Amino acid sequence: MSAEISDPGRALALWNTLAPHRGSEAVYPVRATFISALDGAVTAQGASAGLGTEMDQAVFHGMRARAGTILVGAATARHEGYGPATVLPALSHLRTSTSPAPLWIVSRALRRTDIDHVSKAQQAATRDAGQMSLVVPESCAAPEHRTYAKENGVDVRVVSGGIDELLPGAIGLARSENGGEIDCEGGPHLLEALLRAGLLDELVLSMSPHLHFPSGVHLLPNPEGADTHPWQRRLHVVSAFSSDDGGLYTRWIVDHND
Image 1 (tube, rainbow, N blue to C red):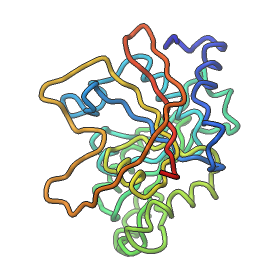
Image 2: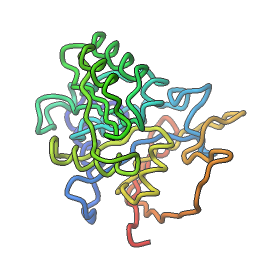
Image 3: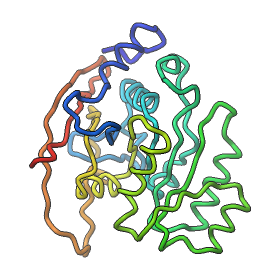
Image 4: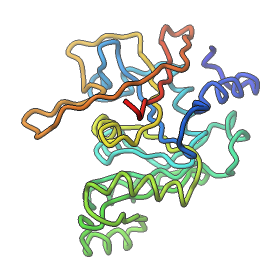
């Protein structure tokens, strides 16, 4: 497949290639978009951009265009410099909504650093960009920080309960408010949490034709000293294609019966 999607026919081909698997049980499936090196590393020189290819960028923008909500972890949003989402003109006519998907930054606690990041990103955004919000558990949203967010024009979505209820609550809220597919763009800790909780339906994984030494953070983190419990998930590949840039682009469904 070609990474050049300015042609309407190529844009439609990419759109259809990225369509959710028909066997998905979810009405609005949760899908993760990641790129990794051949050894599983998802960063090079500290950022995912170091692994990128032209086709990966096309896949990234295709998934954003398909999404009703985009989820990203707070650390990834800060480190990668996330701002409100936009949609490529070549893909915008395929969306049912006229505006880009809202970008929700999921955080275990409401922090001033995240509020400041969102405030600055919104000020720098173009007029055609989507909305940007912080999503936090109610038990970790201090009143003074909620006031600070309001004073800085930052939208905060509060999910009932504690940290364990954050992801199910965020996904439920996204489905009820925005509809459509839910696209998780990172980071590895958010991906691991979604898989562990059985909340992820599909993984859209670009395999970069690179190996880096030393390698970066891997697809599933293994934090030292963390109180973790072993788990496994079985995934089934439902589509795969290559392009002239040498990468392999795959789509996997998660077996919830495993």
